[in-house]
Length: 110
Image 1 (cartoon, rainbow, N blue to C red):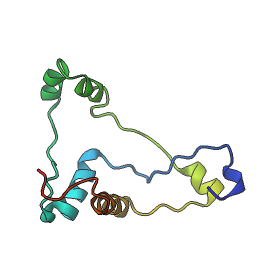
Image 2: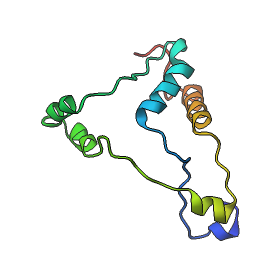
Image 3: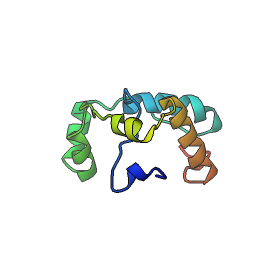
């Protein structure tokens, strides 16, 4: 945030169109799946989430967002800051590599 126009402002830094969680999982599975890291890629059915939400508050919260698109735009950041996003799949891969490099995610865990 070195641009003076950024002072006191907030910006959404997101690619357009946004990726669904399943798409992110597919990218991660292709990137790190061969290194002993299991990435779940199947979609959990609504009815199963609904049953689990009755006893798990975290799933109850997630259920409110099930199949709801999150529409965001980075127009303000692009216009005011001249920000140019990387392709979303490159960003997901870079984040995975960073999590592995800093041992946030450990190899060999299922």
